[in-house]
Length: 150
Image 1 (cartoon, rainbow, N blue to C red):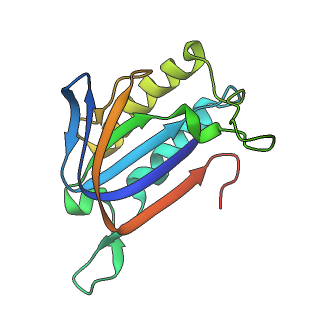
Image 2: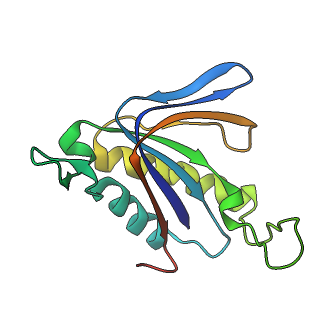
């Protein structure tokens, strides 16, 4: 499972002209799921996302987590995070999980993040052609991979 966290002051997802999810301060999370992902990957990643201390404290240091700043999450499914660019210029996506595996894990991630954060998680629509708008704050962008826990 891979996630790209972007600290934002605002972010939104639009599908066919309708806003499906919109937040102010918080994280835009792009989530990629592969066939090998498990509930353990999901739990580890959800804990990391909610606990990530990248919001400024009174001294301007990145010491605060989402809950400390009353932050929100906009979660977007992003199979292209598992693009293989090894050969040629057209990426392959064979590592990305098919919907029968990815959708249940995506839905579990929404529930897990909501339980950990204590509020509703805003989302896109799985598999839809989404338009994402964001104002990256910092910019702060962090890549996490459950198979490479750095």
